Image (cartoon, rainbow, N blue to C red; front, side):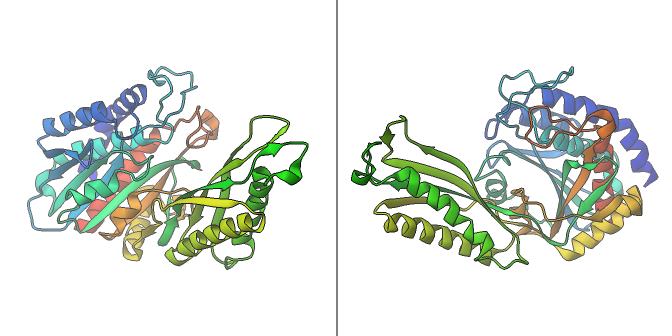
Length: 390
């Protein structure tokens, strides 16, 4: 792998430059036109066959090797978040209220770096590599499904994705066989009561009181309806009702999320939420209107591809740097790719306490240790080499 190692060292400064450019100019989900143009321009300069506007602003580039070996797909996401960047650095976002607060700028830069490296030595590859630059990971229904529907995975035998992750220290990597990241579903429950004077509660059907009971009752799904050995989260994140101190609200709205790791529990939680909402409201003489949205499914890694990750990562990062990931309750639409092609989603550590890089993802001061991009690129290359026997 010495040839790729030398190319990586030459490419790494460019990866940092690309990442900082993208960090200064973030674009929200479904609006990644400039980012896509930036990516496509580089890919074409390196001689890759490029398809644009795949499932939105998505890009699929194909690098053909010299043989008829496997086709390996690599994916990076490109979109930013509606968060104000509060960092004080020369590459801080220049777009008010928008920033790369989850590392997608670095994911894009890493995959660009890998494309540059491999395009310099394509004849040495026994198979093809597909580079997938995906829009809209942060906003459901997401960009993965539209890209898949438009043929992004055509002929692919395996797919790999990397997420730079600040909760883990730089220089480490981890993944997990089977379900690693949770399904993320959303619900909105409207409690319809009967409003009235705050001093005459007996003449009303108090939506705030009923919705408060509902918040408590929903917790029984985890505490009393879920096998303690399974993972499940039911969180109410918003409660809106009323406008005055002396009026009983006729309407209250709850919004929340459900996180699970298997489909049977996922559907059971949905059914239980609907039943609890309806019966709690019925008991107090109110009505319930329920909207339930199934979001991204769980990220489920193929066992053989996880084994490949562990072997390849240990080879390039050292055995002590590689571990099995704990279950992560965050969600990822990389899950859809894994429903079609065997693969592995991997975390590469990007946090560094000594540099003050400690803020969580989606935080206004989020940043990464940029040396993590070198580790991520090295891991992608190692996975390709292992899968292709290159």
